[in-house]
Length: 465
Image 1 (cartoon, helix red, strand yellow):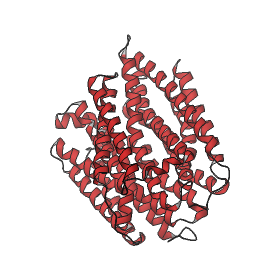
Image 2 (cartoon, one colour; image 1 turned 90 degrees about the vertical axis):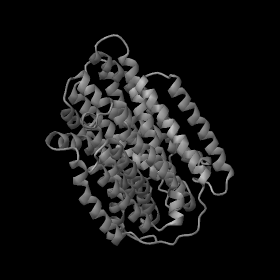
Image 3 (cartoon, helix red, strand yellow; image 1 turned 45 degrees about the vertical axis):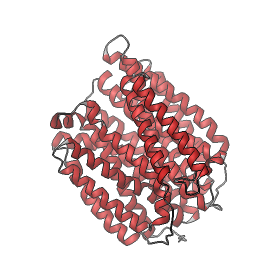
């Protein structure tokens, strides 16, 4: 039911679903800081402990495309209750983990909860928010998911330095319980209908993402395309082609890929993919550069990244208001300028002497632009589709967000590994790798925005929502 204004009930619905997505993201980034501690406590290698992140990204990427089917088959309230309870089970599993497999199982379960909650939040906004406030509400939703990466590294570093890593899970439990009661009151039941589940499509998609993410991880660790990563990536590409063919030919496809027939929508998805990959690549390279090349500790390095991440997160609602009043062109044009300026300054100064405070300042420029651009691209892209296709479009954007994160991390780690294999000290080769990453990201950003901006209209489009 479409609201005429933003009601308390609608706002609480978005917040309740957003808390689940927020908790999933903040645990991911906070736990990355604790990897050395986990390696010692559970006697596992670096390659093994990385599965804490890989397994989470993988299961979220597999669950998110199911959102179109789940929305038809189950009410929003039932989906929220299931997601919240599943997430709580995953948190408790990690809190009381006595071995690494149990810890890994907890992350796997949390990924299921996040994979249900993230598209649910945006579906609530698209279906219930007032037409002239959709941009701002999408910005609020993006704020909830963007604050996680902003706070995660600093929060995880602080918790692990003063107490046990298990307190990361303890402190999130009250928020999950609070979200449960808020969602029980605020989220409405809606009409459902019988829907066929595309079993073959889900199997193909699961195998596709598994193979591609494994290949990207192998590529990032080795720094070159070896036999293992080559086979995994090739298999993933073959499976992706099979999934696309299956989806376009079947009546009960997992996700309606016909949305990509809209050229403007496709350009929005491409830009969304590149921007998120660039952001995750930067999140990988900055801690390495600050700690290895500039010899700062992990907590100080996370503090240097915090202002930019918070700035970008809180720009999302502002970009939404700009979208509601002026359309997408204004926030995207301004955002593109700041994105490119930030990456350009990082690349120029990284070739010389890039200090920690310069990293913080230039990253602020980049994240200011990202805050104006990121949620606007998703909102504008979805308004290009008719109402029946928006659930599929939402599933596409959320799936792309998860997979592009794996691509961005692999891109950064591969370029860094290649540079570190060269002659010189680790500090010098890390500095060289950082410069190469900034240059590659700058080129990718320019190309993506050159493709996107011609497809963006200046007027506000409410009629299709």
